[in-house]
Amino acid sequence: MKELYLEERRQEILRQVQKAGRVSVSELSQQFNVSEVTIRADLQALSEFNLLVRTHGGAVPAGRGLPELSLSLRRQQQVSEKNRIGEAGAALVVDGDAIFLDSSSTALAIAQRLKQRRHLTIISNSLVIAQEMLDAPGVTVVMPGGQLRRETVSLIGVDGLDMLRKFNIQKGFFGAHGLSVPEGLTDVSAAEAEVKRPLVAMCKQLIAVLDATKWGRVGLASFATIHDINTVITDSLAPCAAIEEVRARGIEVIVV
Image (cartoon, rainbow, N blue to C red; front, side, top):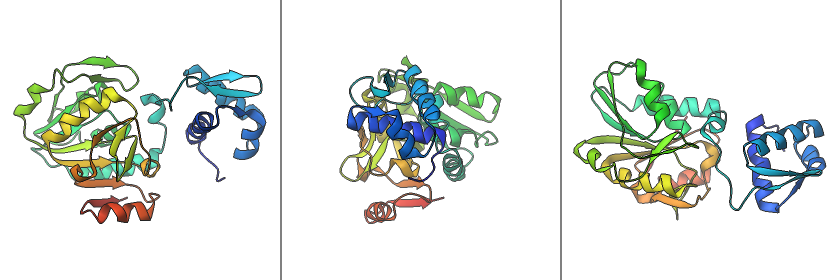
């Protein structure tokens, strides 16, 4: 196996725990070509986030299903890829636009590159994006009401979405747990998908912002079909066959 960054290795460990039901320190050490001390540190860190349970010599799942990593952990994954995707997404935004940015770490990378825009309106349920734009005087931030979801530092619930229907939202930038042709864009959180679904319908263009790890994944709940997507921005490690399958459906794919 190729050498992985720390958070990539930990995510892979999580997947193996969920798939196999248990993992051992010795086997993981050999697989990732790192010391057993390093693997124990990985397991301890994941245990502290309640993502798995330490056992003698290994670990077992903390609960059913693949756990969702917190925003703070997701921001540490595929950093350079998300930065390139963020630049490409920001390049599609012009002064005077009204856009939606979801609570994904990739949408945050877009927001960080929009601070010099003028007469821009950002609609978002992400508290982190709202905070990011505090020093951007040319940007108006509109947030729907809702209930705080700590994992994503976002507001969930559909009751506050009606106020957004008065806006002409030109572009909606959506991250996802996964993209596949049968299921479209999916999320591991049903609550997040419930918010995203009506927002997809409000946006004139749906732009999916996905690093290479998201292709072929399927999360718990779909929030957009493959036919809803206008553009996908992804990185150069994305699988070529999957990209061509999406392009064959008339969807623009921008590879950065």
